[in-house]
Length: 146
Image (cartoon, rainbow, N blue to C red; front, side, top):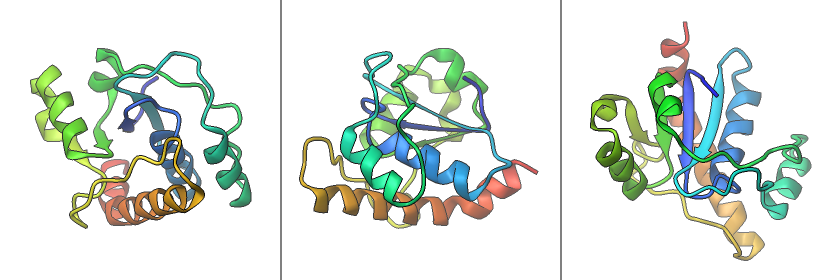
């Protein structure tokens, strides 16, 4: 899995696959992938995430969780995490990638809330935060991928 943009969360079943599919839909020319710091390989996307993306006309049903490995980090030109803590973990594990690891909500000053096993309102809030973060990163991603 290589790509210009790598999106990282904890388990790669809610936030990062949602961000991946939203970004791929908005910027079809951009190579985008996702992975999780503590993902269980092969696990499907959270059912609520699948349903909410389907309502937006996006199919997340084939997603399978991917654990983050060094090659993902090395191959990505830009890595976006959901939280400050995830960013710090990545930089702690791979200090040489410091300059290309950023928080999705950096411009807005927020961490994307973890919606796993939470009610639909929290899922919608997380999706709104992801959409805002992607909008904030749009021009930087566009410049990176030219």
